[in-house]
Length: 82
Figure 1 (cartoon, rainbow, N blue to C red):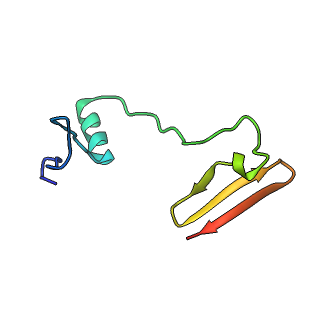
Figure 2: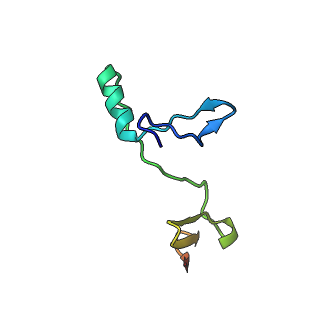
């Protein structure tokens, strides 16, 4: 990657794709006088509990994974370790 934030292999149809670090974007926005963005928590919400493991959404970090399913009174966890 060059000092200006671009890479020769980042090309989409002849146009450059600029990649910036979040800190650099925040600093540039503050210097320009733009209002700061609100921090919104990331969350996944389902309308009803997953009854079966096939209805569950997998969670994990690539090394440890889990499926959470069952009702409110009988929650089940299926763990998978790499």
